[in-house]
Figure 1 (cartoon, rainbow, N blue to C red):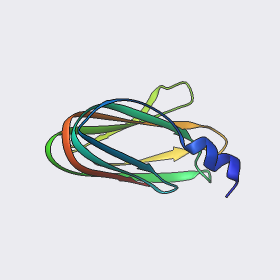
Figure 2: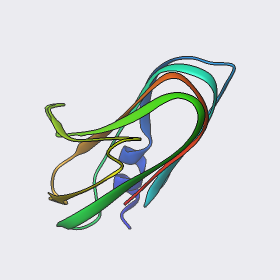
Figure 3: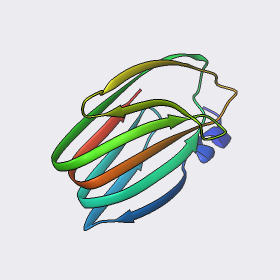
Length: 115
């Protein structure tokens, strides 16, 4: 994997109020551990190849809500996943950049987004 693509994928912005917040972005999954968390985190990245990606959100929350939106380079929504709609497929182009935007509302527990 090209190091430049890896560095771009870890550019993170956030606005969080939480007792506990641990965010671990990865090459094929993002993992989050939360304690009474409200706010958002967004990171930009590129996907390593042009193909259809299947996203699955595993939200193991004892309270609150979590939502993930996949945004295009102009930050327009392409897909939304939450506890009610936890999986989706989409064609992505390796030449384009994308954003994963997580949003939490009084969330406690763990979440994982795999692709």
